[in-house]
Image 1 (tube, helix red, strand yellow):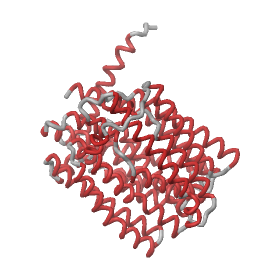
Image 2 (cartoon, helix red, strand yellow):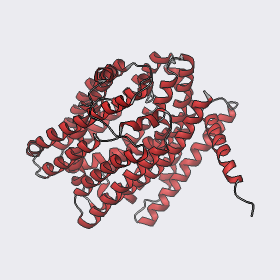
Image 3 (cartoon, helix red, strand yellow):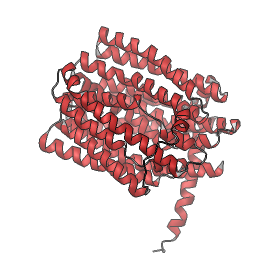
Image 4 (cartoon, one colour):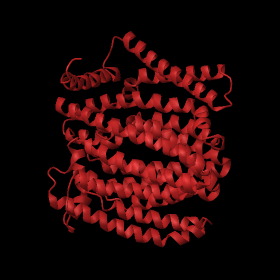
Length: 501
C-alpha cells in the first residue's frame, strides 16, 4: 500500500503543478476572450463543440481504459489501438464535415458551416495521438503529463488570445482548439517515442472490455450535453453563450481542485481491485480528501460569483452569475459520490455504470426540457440542480453496492467538511451584506479579496476546531498531514545539497 500511496502522491504533485498552470491559462483565456468576444460567439462555438462531442462520444472505443486494465499490453496492442483511433478519426472528420451545411441551415447560422469544418479536422488530429502514453498513467508516472498538458494549453492560449485581440472574431476559439490539438499530438510522440504500424488485431479483446463502458459514455454525454443543443435552438446563441461560460466557470473550481487526485484514482483502484477490504479503505480515504478540497472550492465560488463575474468578465456577462451560483454548488456536492466511476471501472462493473447513466438520461431529459419550455433559462438551471443532487445520491448507492460502504457512512466521513462549508457559506454571505455594493474595479477587487479571505479563514478554522474537538480522528486532515510530510521528506534532501550561506 505504501508504494502505491507514494506513487499516487508523487503523481498527484505533478498533476497539481500541471493543473495549476493549465487552470491559470484557462482562466486567463476565458477572461481575455470574454472581453473581446460576444456571448453569441461563445454560443456558436459551444454549439459546434457540443455536436462534435456527442459524435465522438457515440463512437468512443475506450481503448485507454482497456490498455490500463490489461495485464501485459504488447506493441501490437498499441499499434492496434492507434489504427482503430486513426480510422475512427478519419471517418468522423468526413461525416462531421458532411453534416456542416445541414446544421447551419437547421440553426439558421451560416457561420456554423466553417466552424464545423475546422472542428472536423481537429477530431482527425486527435485520432493520431500516441496510445503508448497510457503506460505512464498505468504506472502512476505523470511528469510527462505535465509537459503534454502545459504545452498544448499554452500554444492554444497564445493562438486564441492573439486572434481575439487582433481580429475580435469567434475564430479565436476555433483556431485555439486546433493549435492545442495539433500540439498535443506532436508532443505525445516526443515524450514517449512510438512508431505505429497499421493492424486490426486485438479488436475483439478491446471491445470485450470497452463495450459497456462505451455505451455508458454515449448516454452520459447525451445526458450532459443535450441541453446545449436545446438552448441553442430555443433561446438562441447569446443565451447559449451565457450558459456555456457560466457552466464552465462553475465546473472549473471543483474540477481543478480535484483533478490531480482523481486522475490517478482509476489505475490505483485497478491495481488493488482483487482486495475488497483494501479497496474499500482506499476509496473512503480518497473520497473524503477529494470532497474536503472540492466542496469549499465549489461552494466558495458560488458565494463570490457576483463580484467575481463583474470584475473579470464585465457587466455584459451579468446573466451568467445565477448560472455560476447554482451549478458551482451542485458540482461541489456531486463529489460526494463522483468517484464511483473509476471504482466501477476498476471492478469491471461497466454494465452497471451504463444502466445508471441510461436511467439518469431518462430522468434528466424530460425534466430539463419541461423546465426550458416553461421557465426558460431558469427552468434549465433548476432542472440541473435537482437532477445533479439526485445523481449524487444514486452514485452513493452504487458505492454501497460495489464495496459495501453505506450511504450514511459515506456522509459521516464527510461530516466535518459539510459543517465547515456551511459555516463558510453563511459567514461569507453575511460579510457580503455588510459591505457596500462595489461600483468600480478597485472596489470590486477589495470586495472580492475580503470575501475570499473570510471564506478561507472560516473553512480552515472550523475544520481544525471540529477535528481537535473530536480527538483528531482519521480523515482528510490526517491525509493532508501525510501528504505534507511526504512532500517535506522529498524536499529536504534537495535543500541540503545547497551550501550554507
